[in-house]
Length: 171
Image: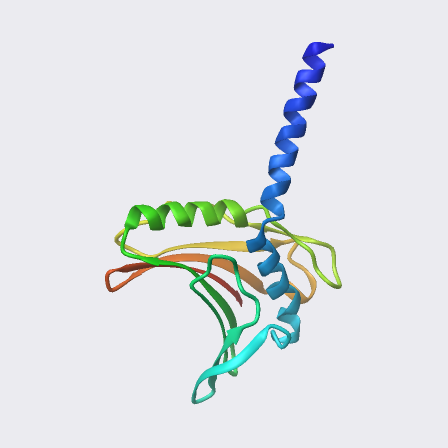
């Protein structure tokens, strides 16, 4: 009996910790963006920041906790939401942040307005100090209005800084 209770307590603790991964604030922000993607992000599009030719950049009304910035870029052929999550010169801090963000996004459950929930799934890739690193998260099942939408976690170097972005766009 004691053995059964111990196993039950351990499994309940594991379930509780797994659920906290699925209900974090980053995933709530991603859910808001993904739910509005079929509407061309009209409900999360803030003020116009810049316009060059047929490309417009807007502030995002969806703010990701801890983000440096969040913007929407719209052109005739593309619609992209980007949250910059880190900018700094320390590779080890950037690498830790990248790994932590992957842990928060991978296997996240995203509720859809008109369809069944989706699960974000991507294969981890160790960040590199010498080349860009990108992890693509697919929405499974890949059906309906969001079948061509992907979420990416990118880390790259710009000048002396490492930059980490979460990006939502279509294939």
